[in-house]
Image 1 (cartoon, rainbow, N blue to C red):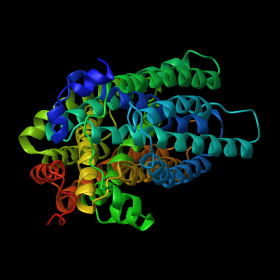
Image 2: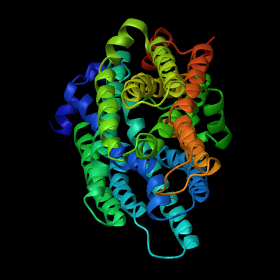
Image 3: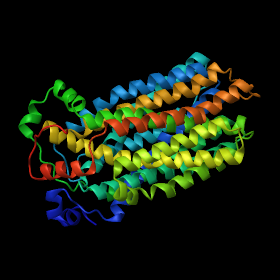
Image 4: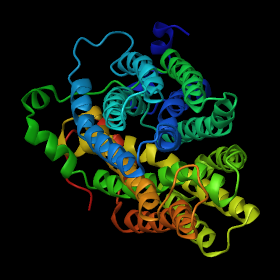
Length: 471
């Protein structure tokens, strides 16, 4: 369908924000996170293993690389968000899609570079890793922020956003599933691990760009945003701080995300270590990932139905509590392949549901920010949320690599009982505790219910820009 034809469909709905999207468009939106996962998930799941075991960088140095670069990335997000918000002379392709597409191509190139290491000294390798991953993180901000912000201008309909959150999470888990099954077997095709990681990253990066291209060509910015132009032109840096720190629902989601994303990333980073040393064979990793993430794809398809029955908040809390129980039980009972797979699958499916709902939360808090402050800044609002994801990724890296250091991990060797216990704790106990804390945060501090958001959407659609805060 052409841009003109698409714009002509549902004009009245667009004016009110209650756009009913076709399933094709909703599914294609999910392909954005599918493409994203083929580049993002590689770094979270395999760079630790690559840098420590293949490049022989000390585990403590790897923890420092991840921690520093993720914090650096977190501070780059507001810059990226502000740059995107400041775009002028928006063309027919919209405000967000062109930035997303161009950046995704550069991101693919940098993904391959992160899995490339020249034959230099250890100090040189560490510096190369810092530089490559910092560059990757900066470009990732210019890819992911416009992609996430795109959802807020496609529709304001609550159910449509829940369905888009589902397709986005399906794309994310689908990417984790395929990379989790395919990456290690591709690596093992080559005698030299350096070559294996390099070739596997090329394949994954190419698929990643394809996913973003599907999103780019099939999604559209339907909702005409009513800008408070005079106020936005006068906005200063202090106003941007106000946008973030007076947005209570956003602050709650930021705090919750520190725990949910660090739990997920710690699980993903430690899986290859757990399979190789605790379960006895690295080749089990694709099998466990296939079951765990395959079931998660099925589980997240229930998000729209669960949200319709219980609302976003209750559904998310329920998933977090189930994941908490499954992960802690997995740590307590003796290691067994079958019980481990069952419990890690339950925990991951339970986490995938609130992680999917989070994307609908983010679109809601973007609108809340506009409703509350009279200034609409999708990029800077999402950048504030993404800041928490980057810090969470740094926490996961510190937990994962830090436990390896503290328990005496030796690359490519038989591990001590202390190291095996540490790997298991990072794999199960930390995620369990983190999800329990996230559930408490969401229960007590998130006040933006679906009913309250419907009133906010109605106010925005009627041109009412400033109101009181949510009680």
